[in-house]
Length: 355
Image (cartoon, rainbow, N blue to C red; front, side, top):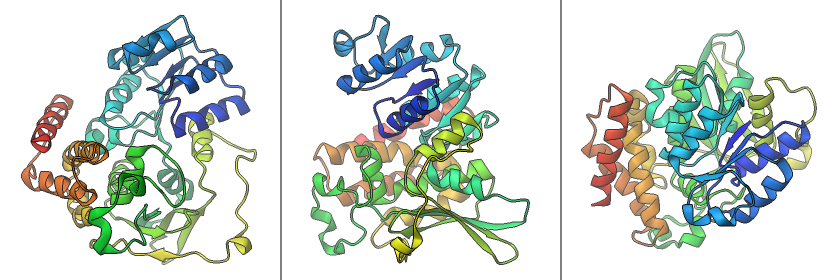
């Protein structure tokens, strides 16, 4: 396998599965966590390593190390590996997704931005989503008429926070997720509910439907539900551990235990909440985004700029959604007809939001 983002949560879980099933790792791509990368290199002995910065090359314990976006693309093209696990964060993951598909490799996709910004231009024949929500929907599909699909959200760091205090929350508070520990970007996106907008867009491309919605399930045990035309609903219930969808994406079929079953008696109760626009302003454009998925490139670029500004203490938490909503209003007629236009619009939206 080729693992893009090996030191992140998805990458670490993928390597745990690789170890469990004795899978070969050909390429590791990582960012700044060189200490963890060196541990992974020692354990899995990849042929090629790619990192983010040239300055860190001397710190990597490997003889074949390169850096940067072009190096990632070259590593994908030159590798004989048949599977690419793409867990890179943000727009950076799009070109590797496209390169892997062009090279005829199977793409286990955790980089949701690839579909969010360019779903209309991505061949899905060799693409398998790793997101637990989309895995859950796939797992539930039957040969029955479907009415609609629902995915769940945790509600993020501020689901129970007083609304009047949201404008003054700190970065530390925003990164304090109630259910799990993941990277800064996705944790902030969970708190604003932008992550769930992204996942609905993903589902639109993956399952060819706009009859999609999301609800809050506070314990993150139910990941997806399908409402069938006959009035029945099925739910996918599993512990929140990415090793299950990763196993299916990498292995194709899984017949042995990956997770512990949930003891519903111990769980006792489940709590569901509506996603309220008052708490999550970005939710107000959910239907518009699903009706016009071309806006995916706008919402992603604006959000990446806004989250970066927040993490660098340049704006407040509520300003993240304000910047994104302003960009959607300004660029509401975006209609890219090619991948080249996707990249052009991405640059233009970023420039607008930076200013």
